Image (tube, rainbow, N blue to C red; front, top):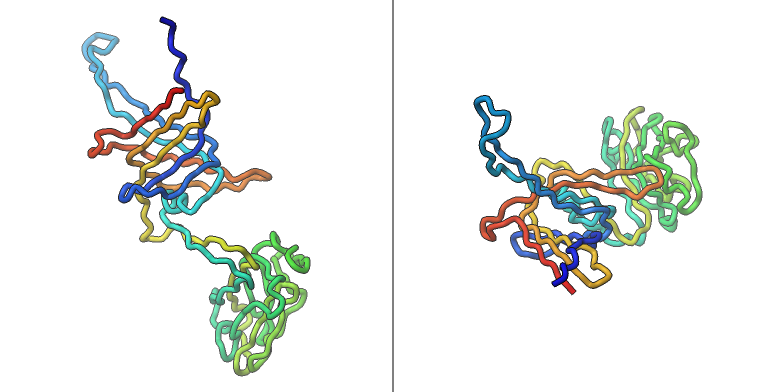
Amino acid sequence: MALSNPRSFFGVHSVSPYSRATGEFYGILKVIGSSSLSLSGETVPLTGGSSKYPWHVEDGAISSELSLTFREYPDFVFELFLGKAPTTVAAETTGNVSSMTAVTGTSLTNATTGIASIAAESGLTAELKFGRYVIKAASATTVDVYVSSDVDFNRGTDEAYESDLLKITASPLTVTDTGGTTSITNFGLEITGGSGTVALTTGDTVTFQVRPINAGGRTVRVGGSADTFPEFGAVVMAKQRGNGELMELDLFRCKAVGAPIGFDENAWSEASVTAAVYYDSAKNGIFDMRFIDT
């Protein structure tokens, strides 16, 4: 009788984490760079006397880890590895301008003597440009405006910075008394003055955020004191071989804490995560493997 063909695995097709409570899948990772299950054991030797070699050797602990490298960021990556599920933002056909948050002083957020609101200007929502904005009081009645990045400055009318401090206003804008409005030209934004006589404190600042017209998105704040990292199971599927062979690993209990989010020059972002894989007493094991011959 001839020897059987070697059993070999080739590539990785997907990783599908699932809830241990319900068995439901969180989703699927398919843009996978690598997936490796490491089972690294140690031996415990008995030494003593003049012998240079152990008298006995017994089994020690086995470290079991799942190492993943992936190049996509579905919502469950943040939930499982960073402790917080993102919030879905529905499509915004007119964009979004957040409320102002005072950073230095409070004169700018005074609805009577400061700025009543910052909003998208009617008919100019196509000019809204993505970013974090800062407004600074330049005098008792004028302000300068700054933006965190020029990544979206070609949306609508092209724009450019006015200074190395990321200022977008060539000269200070006047905040108009009794609810008058002032445009932030080519940015689709409108400042509405307070209901009374404007009286700002020079140097006060506020910040707000702008999202342009979009088809939806996500927001998430990571690092909260109440964030949790759920235990999960995971199904790892090897790539189907050309002869039809299939291999699957079902890891019963996994836990990962932390994940990098990299930005490299002219390269797709890639994250490498290591998850502990550990014993499931109900199943008396740590994983199942299924292999389909053809």
